[in-house]
Image (cartoon, rainbow, N blue to C red; front, side):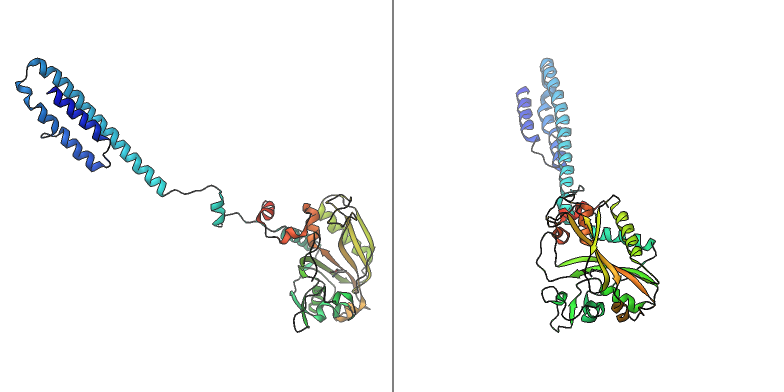
Length: 347
Ligand code: PHE
């Protein structure tokens, strides 16, 4: 009997680990411990056995019963754990910021640095009572050249600078000064406004030149406006923007639509005036061309130059952004490289 018991125990130990679900566990248990099960089958002859045998076999049988119970419970736990793990594996979701999540478009959005600076400047000018005007990218000769006192022979009309449409009448605006003309057409003086926007030039690109870039035009028309007024507004603008002392210089500049005309340069903040690719080794960056509005321009805009005068400026927005954030190549601004764009997220 003891031998049979030991054989059964061996058989049990070999097969219990192979049970893979609850039903086969229940069947297995009945097979061993049930009334007509394998254990009772062996113990059938107990009544006729001697007291000694009954004692040893009884003890062994009880031990075995306990082993069966324990092993079956352990196997059940194993099966259940495996089932939970399988389910977890199946429903697994990565909630961390990995590349796969970014690719699904869950990346936090941010503003382009040009937008950030443009809005800052808009706020400054709004606080000084300026309006904000817009204008079309596709313009005609009149708004881009004619009304701005740019004669037919002016080099700015050269095919190299201007993207003309096939009809040779329309073009991509080469500067936001077109908004000056549209602003004069739409308003009676006195008025003051700014006009930010994209402009286009057919030029070779390098660290400081792009074919598409941004300007921010400004115009103020009123009575007895002077160069001193112009300089006051330009200084206010620069000190608000940079919030630090920047060295500036004013020199004469020629633009057909202003008289007198000026170039307002700032000392290059990228190289601290030492000379680099952005300032073309000069230490200075042309940032703010400006001047007193030419009487012909006022006339073309339907304004009597005997009664009114004013100033205009055309801020180079991309260059300003580059100075503010120490960006050493304008091509980064249009490069669509996310590693560049992501740096500005927190602004
Ligand atoms: N429109 C000029 C340019 O693009 C800049 C400018 C604007 C100069 C207003 C004077 C006054 O170069």
